Figure 1: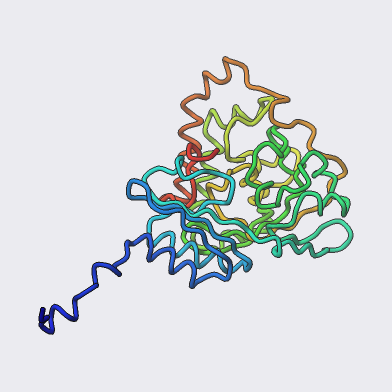
Figure 2: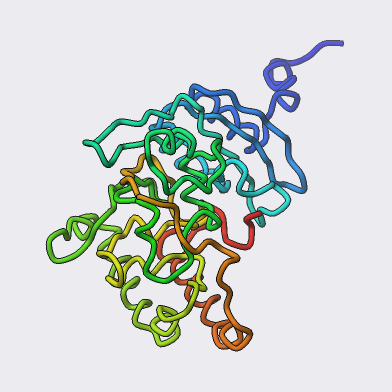
Length: 303
């Protein structure tokens, strides 16, 4: 059988054509040093996992997740079945990103794969109740490791944090006030910060500052100088990986673990009833300020 030139040139093209998801996985593999595992597509949405061994890899992954409409998920925070309306890239941080650099005798600069056990062995007693193998990235994201009392986010010892926002920009966040307005020099934060303080002034949020435990997933109470100075870094304690991507943290030694952990203080039925609508409203507003496009998870997608 003879074949004309046009047919010859197009022969086999269908066999080698790739879906956008396959292209995404190939570009991930070219962009980062670590291994990638493609778990395939299900009902039009893909899932994959990748291990990164360079902090800069997070920037490459963010750009590709935006381009291909995939959620960038900290490993272990969600499963593909929970991610709604988009594909899912689970990102594991290689143990090599676990350097802890002393900053004097009472603080350190720690990479995201440093573990609670590492820091506890160096005298950071706030990690006494945290499983030794939990990484700092997961410690930050998980609400179960932080004091639930309004105004007590400082018991974490978190002082500053280097984050990547959903738009790929990065910043170092920490103390904020009359003597340190550096966050306002960051364009995206010029819009976000005033809105956060506006939320803090809402009636139900102000009322919540006097409760036995903080009812919202995002620690807006860190922006109120109750028992410690205002600190933007602590807003993200327990955020479940839904607002920013954590790169490095400055942590200060604390003399003891947080006194009141989740489950030790509860809202009353009356308090829950008052806040049922406010919780949805406030958490939605904060999510919309930091990640309006859903590059990271939504709270209802988390495990």
